[in-house]
Image 1 (spheres, rainbow, N blue to C red):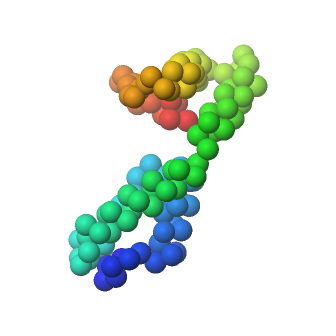
Image 2: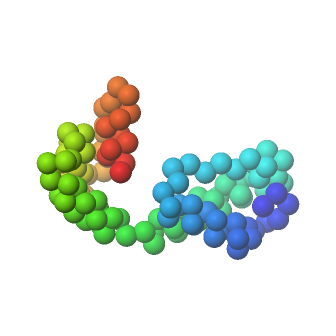
Length: 115
């Protein structure tokens, strides 16, 4: 979208696929640095991400990870168990929880929570 006013289908497909594959970050380089529609490109990116996230079944993903962790039994480590407990609380209280804060020194527990 460097010179165009609307994104091409392959660009939108790439964003959606990356989002569903678990991408944490998207970077627009040429679109925002030399593109003539940098704000529009960013707006389309945000809309494409939001649409892709609407398709993803977070409830089923939660159940899959929970069942996988239960299957590990004694082999599950303490961080996985702690993260699982935090996610269980957030999931069961999802109607009442707007924000989940994770305090960490090295980011390890945050990565387990994100899993």
